[in-house]
Image (cartoon, rainbow, N blue to C red; front, top):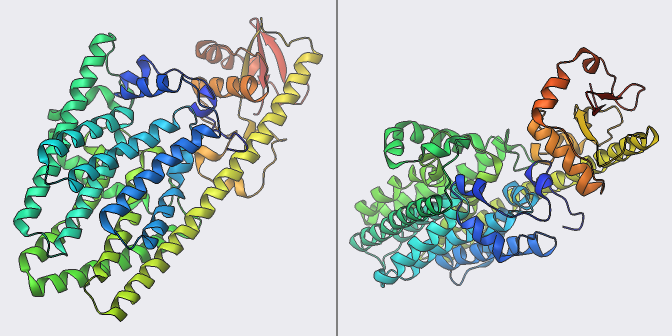
Length: 488
C-alpha cells in the first residue's frame, strides 16, 4: 500500500480507475459491474486494499465463530496463515479489482455461515445462503470452494460431537446442498438475465462459454482427478510459491500431523459410534473436491494463483477443526493437542509471511528498475526529438532482460506475478504493460502501436538487427512508428 505496488499485468494496465463492463460480464462476473459503480470505479490505496483485507478478516472471524466459539486464539493464528498467503498478496496487486476478490471470499463464507448458524430457520437461511453464494460467484467464481470447504469441515466437526445425531447432521447436509444448488441456479439465472439485457455472450476465455450443467456432468471423472491432482500440486510449492520454507517437506509434515489427528479421532469415534466414524472418514476425500469446486464448473480452465483462495484456506480450517478434537479430553491431552496444533500453525505462518515479504520486495525492485529504464528511454527519445503524443511506439523485449535491469537475489525467489519487468512477451500483454509503465508510473502520454503492427515490425530484418537499449541504434523510426529495442 505504501509503495502503491501493482502487478505487471492487469494491475498495471488498469491501475487506479476502471469501470467493469461487457468483458467482465462475458466472464460470468456480473456482480462486479455493481461493485465498481458502488465505489465510483476508483481503486486508490490505502482505502482500497484496507477494504479488501477487512473482507478477508471478517470472513476469518465468521469461520472462527463457527468452530471455536470461546477458544479463539488458535483461530486467529490460523487466520493469519490465510492472510499471509500469496493469494492475498496477488489479489491486492490487482488493485482495481481486489475488493471484488475480497467480497467474493466474504460472501461465500457468509453464505455458509448463515445456513449453519440458522439451521433451525431453513426457509430464511437457505434462500439467504443461496443469495450470498450467487453474489460471491457473480464477483469471482473460483471462491465457491471456500463455502464448500467450510461445509465439509463443519460436518466433520459435528460428527465428533454428541449434540447432533447422524439424522440431524444429514438434515443439515441437505440444507447445505440446497443452499449450494439454489446459489448456483440463482447465479445462472442472473447471469443469463444480464447477458440478455446487455446484449453480451459468454467469452471463450478459459472455457467460459462451455459452462453448463451437462458439461460438468460429462467431465465429472476428469474434474475429480484434476481436483486431487491440483490439491497435491498446490502444496508442492512450485508454480504457486506460498512458503519460503521447503514446501513439500513443511506441507508434508503439516498434513501428516493433521492426518494423524484425524485417524486418532476416527478410532475414538469408532469405539463409541461406528456410523459416525465411517461418515467422518468419508469426509476426508471430500476436502480436495470441496476446495477445488471451481474445477467442476470451469472444466477447461487453467488454474492461476489468484484462483487458489479455497486451497489457501484449507490448512487454517483443518487446524481449527483438529483443535476442537481436544474437547471432552483429559486436561493434559487437550493442552498437548492445542500446543502441537499451535506450533504447526506458527511454522506455516512463518514460511508464508516471509514468502510475501519476498514477493513485495521483488515487485518494488522490479518496478524501480523498470521505471529507471523507462525514464532513460524517455530522455533518449526527447534528445532525438521523438517524444510526442502524436507518435506511436513499439517496445521490443522485456525490461528484466535489459543489461541495466538491477535486482537482488530476492527477485528470483518470488512468484511470477511479483517479478515486475518480466511480463509475458506476447504483443497484447507486452504493449499494455509498457503503456502502463509510461503512463501511470512515469506520467508520460505515450501511445503504443497495435498488436498487428507489432507483429509486422518484428518480422522486419532491420528491426531484428537492432541492439538493446541504450546502445546506439536501439531507437529507430520504422513505418512511422518509433521502435525501441529494450532487450534482445
